[in-house]
Length: 387
Image 1 (tube, rainbow, N blue to C red):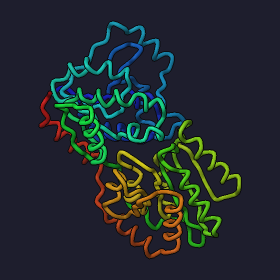
Image 2 (cartoon, helix red, strand yellow):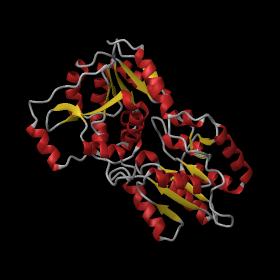
Image 3 (cartoon, rainbow, N blue to C red):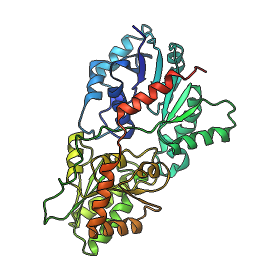
Image 4 (spheres, one colour):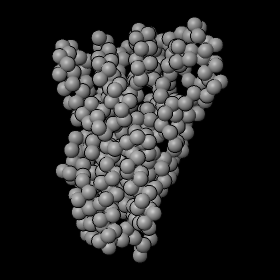
């Protein structure tokens, strides 16, 4: 039997959060199936190992979590300390690192890479912390330059968008790197719904619902969306706004405070926080269209998920978001400030024909699945030489 393909889930196996990267890693694991062996670096045992039942349970969790950080139970810490000096690095045919790894994991990667006989590949999500440090958590900003240099140790980098690929290669060029690993653009997939949910909106006679799915943090630009909706409510437009996503305690605080103030004033605004996949699917079914006001993304899964549900999405036309919007079913804006968002919201609320045409275009889009992504990734790796 050939050696397994190792999949480093050092962070995701220790959290039940389902923000973007955690969703990518869980979905990739499911798509790879028996070909993959999920592993973690155990900082308490100071070694790499396969996952324990409690870690598999974290990966299988369907609901949302209030925190995105990694958590280790006390007994797991004790077991790890007792195993120190007795761990072995698992051998494999190849390695995929889909997470933005920590400095601790980075220090342990050389031993893991040495145990592989095939290519070692990292998935690169975005360079937001480098390009827009004011929109990223301070800890991430401080860590990011070292992470971008550590990626040079891999045999190949799978960038999730052309914008992400260009950002990474430009940074390496600026550093003067002479022989970087190849960087291939491989767009992510999604798990498409069984059928588009057009026609399942709120009952006739009730105001339409606008949906926004995404963590509440600075770069997601929820403050602009909230101000746009407040402008339309003040002008007399009848609609409700439904927000879903985990709030970041640092960069999302201002948006969360504005959200609470609007709720206190009686505006039709619902915020569910992080929820499970079933609740997200029901929210897509109930909405008229979605708004994803993010300023910058590495990919923009909520855009693709919205059109997969047959629901038009309002989003930025810039960078990776523009790539995701280009297939149809979206209103892509040059600016996603409050004025631009308010204008397009008013237009879609008042022109059902345009909304119907956008929904039709969304339903017509071919949807790339996680199975497609896993197939393309492993096919590329099969021909990727070790450096």
